[in-house]
Length: 147
Image (cartoon, rainbow, N blue to C red; front, side, top):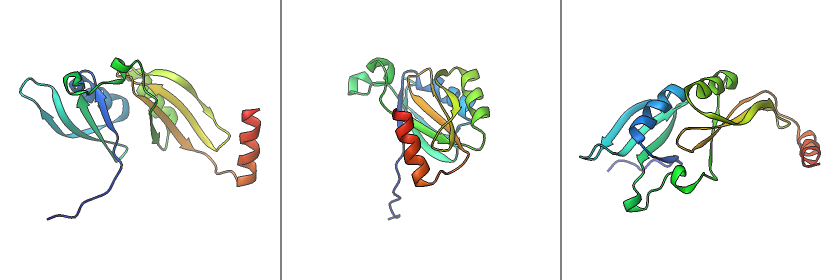
């Protein structure tokens, strides 16, 4: 028996997952090594990687209780990408079809950061660390931002 690997892997439910897989290739440079389809063509399971991290993608299956953010009217979950050049990744995502939920900006916690929503209702925050504030500076910035 092989050892069990531990990890936290986002599992995205997407309406029209086959098209979503291609979108994730274009928007985030996803690699798609594994796709398992049901006989009717729907994606039962796909294992992709984005930024060297695993992500699972599955078709929306309302008959089994599997609903997408589109069916739910949105999502409270944000998938976070830390990248070397958030401006380039953000622009690529928007060009591929994401909408801007929060424009890129330099944040008080030291990152350049913004949020997009993909056409399937999933939110993605994208950032590049610029500096690490010392704890007192960070606390002062939090208080100032909460203003």
